[in-house]
Length: 337
Image (cartoon, rainbow, N blue to C red; front, side, top):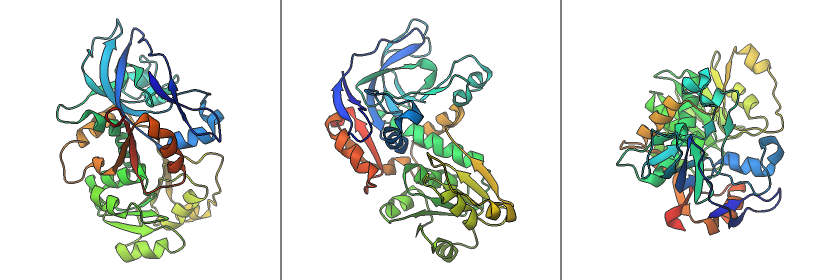
């Protein structure tokens, strides 16, 4: 089968061949319909040791596909089923897994494999897509669920004022869920305006340029300081920045993946008695809710999709995304090959 392979730091991904995997007893073999390129994939290729990425590994954890065959112990799925995949694989039998929280299983591992024609996953990681949802759009379920978990962790209440740092896919999806959960104002901030129209399309009430003047610009678009600030970039210093922006007794939610340490002066957080929360992954109920949210509605996560590419375009597109292009969510799609 075709697959896009990681080589080593400083080199682009390459398109190669890998054997089609065989499913274990509790697994299914999937023909992948689409896989999203995630910002964490970009991080992994620049710091592979931290993430356990090895030479010739296949990236990709945002994917959906069709079941081709099932292991002998699989009774919940059958060939032909169209499924989205939650990429956190737990042991399947501990208390966390039984609660539908494999992300917090002691044996959890984040699976890749989506940048390929086929992959195997445990059947318990799969959820069947609604009949009216195009299979490629099922690849959005994972990032939509991540953003939902962020909003649930934040304790957001109807009427809250929300500021989101970062207009990448997760930041925009946080805006989507914040609006659905009744936030009065949802303002997305970024260092450029590439995603301003897309932010409005997904439900944001305003857009601002991030920088020294952000607090003033937020006040000009809002009725007060933000109740909640979501840091969705993962750059050094932004948690500190968020603490300076949020109101007294407000909440800062760390979402962005900041690797290699950070700089933070806790005085602002202490003096304002800020609640600091961090969010990562999701539970299976949130994953199912994310799938349902991909259906009809005024605001749809599908607005994030900017391109669908085949395997041959992946290396160049991947390198371009590292340089912050105007693209948002790029899908590697079988029908684009």
